[in-house]
Amino acid sequence: MSARVRAAMLAGCGALLVVVPRWLLPVCPAEAEMRCAYTLLVATIAGAVVIIAAAVSLASPRVVVRWSLVTSLAAGIIAAVAPWTFAPVCGSPRMPCVSGAAPGLLVAGLLTAGVAAAALATHGRGSGEVRT
Amino acid sequence: MTGRLLLADMRHHLETALAVAAVVAVGAGIAAFAWAFGQGAASAISLGAERLGADIVVVARGEGAGLVESLVRGDAPDGYLADPTAEIRETTGVTAATPQLFLQSAEADCCDEGDVLIVGIEPATDFVVSPWVAKGAIGPAEDIVAGAAIRRPIGLPLTFLGQRRIVVANLARTGWGYFDRGAFIGIEAARSTAAESVRRDDVVDVAVPAGSVSAVFVRSEQPEVSARALRTSLPTADVVVLASVGRTIRDSAAAAATTAWLVAVLAGLVAVGAIATLVWSATRRRRTDIALLRALGASKVAVVRVVVMQAAMLGLMGGLVGSATGLGLATLFANWFTYQASIPFVAPGPAAWLWGGVGGAVVCAVVSAIAAIPPALAAAAADPYQGLSA
Picture 1: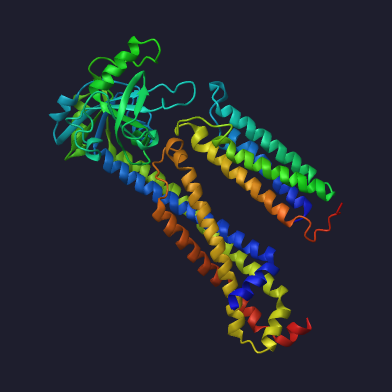
Picture 2: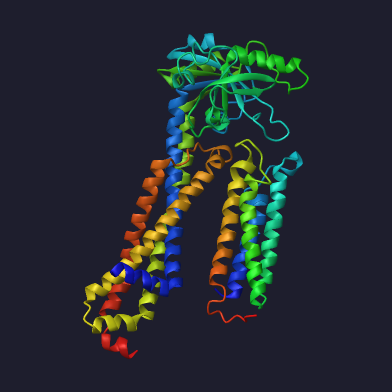
């Protein structure tokens, strides 16, 4: 996997983490001041972290690339589990955050973690990257 | 022996193997999702129609237009009407009529057990809930029959609008919010709960006019004839024939399933093309190996068998992963279909997982094998001499 393809895929996943709970499968309306607002915050931060890590992964030192991929992996897992653990969504299955945003974040988070894990597994395999 | 060789070869050409498996997984995932959606929606629609058991529903004027969507989502229609049950029972073709009173409990500040649809039913005449629970389950005012989404086991209390009640029965999941979010109590208990909520300061006021109901569920031998008569005799009510509205939901679910299937077929065709291309490119890359095999005496059939078996193995693996992902997505978004898209939906059960997973994987293996035949034949037909001198 070339560095640019890897960075583009990770940035796309990061964007997905931001877009899913905000627009695609949105959490409850902000004016209602529900607790899923914190889920949205966590997902947005995780998405931003993945996008920044994707940009950083274009750097050549191998250790920097590896840590940016590990960071993306962690951010993906955090975004996936957040709605069910430390940043829970609301309680009623009727609410959009429960029925849409939470499963959407699980999928987007696992996708991000999967892409980061695959990139980690193939990192340095004949890609001609500089080793430090 | 052949299997071990194939696995070793896949390890050496990991990226090609992963690409073929991924293409198959995407196609299988879309197809499994479409299949699970079609099955889940169809079974929920028929289950809901069977459970409701009514041909006609009479509601307050203005509530009829979105009634079935409200029943799917489990929203309470806001309007009340003076109880017309006695008059309805006298109407042509009507064989049974039972009144219901809907109360929406408070949603609290965000989200406790509060957000349930309280449904007051008349135990003596009810044919909507009573047939599905033990005889006499709804008796004393403290008793409640809880829908599947409420997740409160029998014997435990449930408090809404300041009233504490004991769960005496749980309903199975139907994919309809009316049943799944429903907390069914006697209609008089519902009326007293509403009256108490107005008296108390610590709960939301639910004002219900005295002697009124939210809906009357009607069974009729001639639904259309009865509906016409009811529209004339009850000018302040909306009369909804469930068969016609149910058909609309069935049509919209069928349209969504058809679209999903079209996408699945398209994805399948793209996957077949992609598999053939990937296998062709892989055999081109390994033409020296294949030529060596042929030069050592391997028949053309043996070469075709190796290539096709490898594609089938990758198809099987990709199919398993893709089918599981598609079924998993359908399960994850079950509530979204019901409460956001207003389509009754039951998540795939263990049997669907078994048949969908195994069936999907086998179909993917067969399709991958078929897609690999043309490049395999081309590879087998190549002249060994040319392959070795390439």
